[in-house]
Length: 262
View 1 (cartoon, one colour):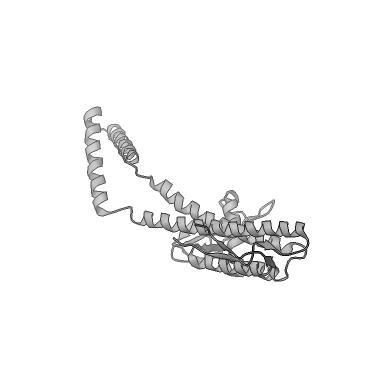
View 2 (cartoon, one colour):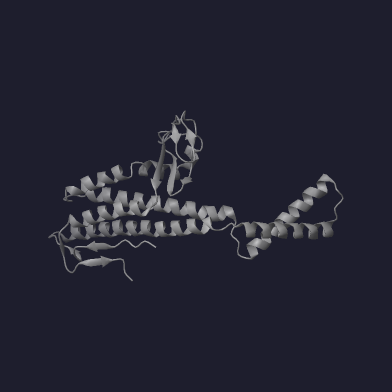
């Protein structure tokens, strides 16, 4: 488990305008909350991936095959087997249903549901990064905000160049699945070349949605290019550095604060 520590230079913002300080303090708390959402998503993502990796063994496959055969023989004895195509389909269907229900009852999680856990957590990480980006942009645009916040806000885009495009596509799959870009009246996209460990399409023409390539979550963005965001401690370390620089931009009073708690 990764635990990223955050040190705030003080307890309260030290500015004469209390209303302004209260509003900015709230935005900073939300910024930190998005950071810890990303930290949580990263830990759960890696845990889910490791559990998925060790699910199948040869011994389990052989045991499942033997149990399938036993259930099929039981179904054949109950329903009768007359060597007709209809009988074969009926028995195969019933045996398959009984086997799966037995596995589920013993605690086995269907592959479709298990795979979705990893995908959901990958998107949660992307959404937390995007939330951090949005809160930082709002902070930078506040009246009398430190000038450096604008630079730090722009740095998010340079560290995670595909973040906004990937996040937007995950929110508008109904358009991307139809090959449409962004906007109120989206236009058809021109799908650009894609080259990675999973896909080789140097001539373009491939639409990618909710793809997980190792620890990289990616999809086709509204401009037709493939984009991805790395779900890793390194990504969160970049965010940690940005968060601390943001906190250092302000004047504080009161004891130094350390997070997270126990």
